[in-house]
Amino acid sequence: MELLEGKMTGTPRPLDISTRLQQVAELARKVPTALNTLAHHIDIELLREAYRRTRKDGAVGTDGQTAAEYAAKLEDNLRDLLDRFKSGSYRAPPVRRVHIPKGDGTKTRPIGIPTFEDKVLQRAVTMVLEAVYEQDFLNCSYGFRPGRSAHDALQALWEGLMEMRGGWVLEVDIEKFFDSMDHGRLRDFLDGRVRDGVLRRTINKWLKAGVLEGDALRYPDAGTPQGGVISPLLANIYLHEVLDRWFETEVKPRLKGRVHLVRYADDVAIAFSSERDARRVMEVLPKRFGKYGLTLHPEKTRLVPFDPPRRGDDHGDGPGSFELLGFTHFWGTSQSGTWVVKRQTAGTRFGRALQRVTSWCRKHLHRPIAEQHRHLVQSLRGHYGYFGITGNANALARFLFEVRCAWRRWLDRRSGRGAMPWPRFSRLLERYPLPRPVVVHSVYRT
Image (tube, rainbow, N blue to C red; front, side, top):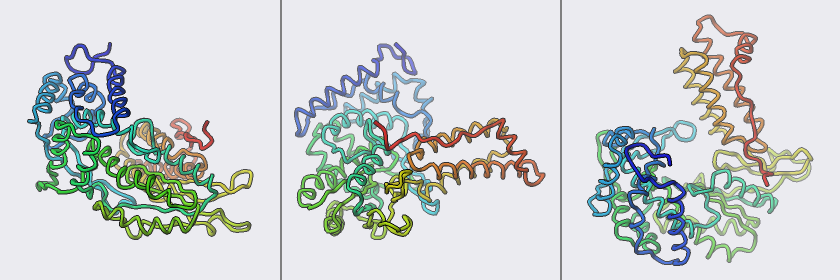
């Protein structure tokens, strides 16, 4: 049996932990009401597994402690953490806030960085709560759930639009969602499923933990920091009640036509076959979200006509287009000449990805060619791994071309001899080839 880092004996296999969490799931399935005793499932074995699942290369929190430093006395640290968690003496440390580029780079998104120990405990609590809530979450929800991905959400939306042959698409944009979740409402939602005192006190401590930004320490009365391990689950719980369950039980039965809701965290798209249904939902949606302290962006929340073009129309002028999860969705013709929903890399995401590559080449232009090549290969494969979907070949090929140009441009600066002739650069590419585009995610999967 392979041991985890540190001096630990008797560490269970991940399969053993999965079996225990499956028992929690079965209990939640049998008892669809509030569960009063869950904290006992978090013991030293589960903390060890939570440690194993926690990233070791992340940025440090407010205490400055690295994963390696925590691992030096791992067994002692985990047992001390368990004692403080069970006794109620655990104190949630402030979250360090940083800002990362958003969209086209002109705006930023705040990200919270917990301490490493806090990440481990959040992971353990998330593992238990996830086993409970996976029995409740609906099929329309895809974000940060086990066995589900952004590509599953894209596939579900594509299939829904193809089945309806178009209609109307409502793009829903929630302003500053992670900063706006009402703590009182979230506690009410949790009351319906989890009433274990130890778990609830710990969650309350995370909600009340301060946010350290620079030298300023604040204590927000709403929201949960993006970047926290438990934040995506709390966000899913919140939107499960505010949107998913409400839409499924109260809205859909009142609609005349077909409808297809897809949500990935706070990214939402709703496809309607009926314009009247779409406009009715668009009218009531701001009121529904406002009831729970959330605001829809007045410009980014929009209703898009999405019917296939009529005969003779060009696909760029006929139907509308919309964006979801980094892709622009539009109608185009297949190789057989029929109208199909196509997806291509959204302009903002394309530009942001290329800017990252260009910036890296500029900062590392004096590194060995082989090292630069390894990084560019890794970047391209990562890009293909997400954006390599059916119908996006042109955007992938263009990205490869732009990466080649950026590399050549900064190699020119390195030599100081002026522009590198393309024949010379082509010979370099023969020795250090960049991977060609590949479709990783096919809409025709079985």
